[in-house]
Figure 1: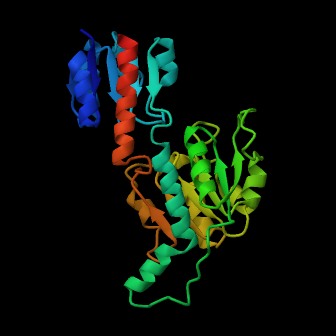
Figure 2 (figure 1 turned 30 degrees about the vertical axis):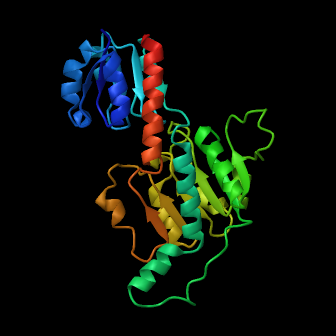
Figure 3 (figure 1 turned 135 degrees about the vertical axis):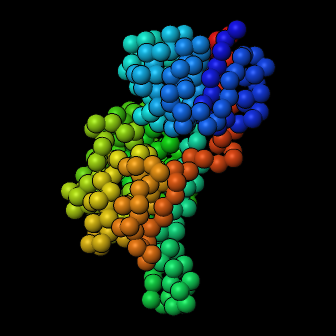
Length: 304
């Protein structure tokens, strides 16, 4: 019988579907013990993970029977995909299954930051009543620049268009059939966007994609939103750009180091127009169900 190892959280109904067909070992905290995973992985045909389990060469060398890796999410930077290819191990992400959740996050952060909600909250909480001292803007008619137009970027475009945002899109590999999207180059997007939202995978080419030089090219005081990977933005340069009033606010759901380090948090002042969240933009009750069911469907198709 096919043996499956699940090292991180999966929806309970999806897990039951797996157990009805396969022999499954489930431990949602197993990712914390990489040595144990390496010790037992040789017995398994399939591994299902999220983003915390480090599927590196040390693990894969021991995985003599492994044929399939299901990723309960989209990013693959915790999986050595090149080595998987060499070992003929199929890697399946849950492409598009959390896109709606991310799109709603981007829209809500855009509205909150353009209206200076974090500053208004802070001032009100302190008893200052900043009704006339902190100004707000309407989001309708503003321009959203989307960097990366994969499944998530497309959903952000669709959702944010519906609430009145104009869209500029940049993708290194624009699809010719996507004529309804207004593609532009990165430089033009930076110069003309009121809000910039990042949706690219982390790679050598995208690391520090947004840096000191990028901020200098931007339209006056835009908003930055990052739900992709932390290292796509140079965090030091981001804080510097805010302190120099080159940008008016930012929302970070991802960080160079996760959990976020105290050294970074020390740079965040209470009166900053920013939103920090713990890598949850794609995680909702609904998306967890979709992601889990999608991967289970793919596993069943592969082994049956």
